[in-house]
Image (cartoon, rainbow, N blue to C red; front, side, top):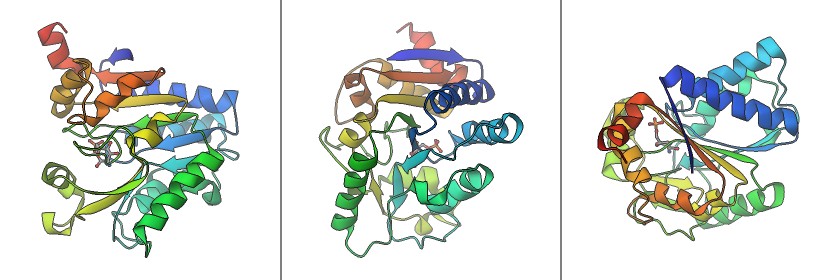
Length: 246
Ligand SMILES: N[C@@H]1[C@@H](O)[C@H](O)[C@@H](COP(=O)(O)O)O[C@@H]1O
């Protein structure tokens, strides 16, 4: 794992955008893996700026999102589909038919998971997968206990994850209990992975990750099994690593 430590969230977002834009300029038909949550918002803002000010085009790019809540109406403001449309897709020149997100409302969740994984295999591999990380080490919605071999599947969200995400909803009760997520193995199929971590609330998770104990207890640790992962962490997220001289 290649680790880049930067000053703050802004710099993390800028460095991530540089890497992503380089990928797209080298291969305009790139397949990108995208994440939701607060972490990639700065990256998406930079991508929009790059498109509007420097003409970076996503016309031929295809994207896969990591996950989607189970049961939320697809037009619910907190669905990840709407999150992606609002924060990125509608502000760049990507074709909506090139953007893939699990269907959280599918009648048969098993069929939806198989369909999504098959789509990744058909259109992919993902050239560059963007990841954030939960405070409990989840990537996508692969909560602790998820197997390394997991493909796209349904998962029950941890209480800590629901609490962390409650800030986007009216109340904790409204946060869905389940989600469909790409699995660990689906993520590791990507050619390159870019993991972003910002802020003090991620310091413990970054420390655990860099301790390099590969275990289901901390799903992001499986990233050590991949040959091309870059972690961009800001000072606050890296604080405990520095403090303990890991
Ligand atoms: N499913 C998402 C993840 O893809 C994200 O990386 C993580 C961290 O979120 P944040 O970036 O808001 O800290 O949790 C969310 O619930």
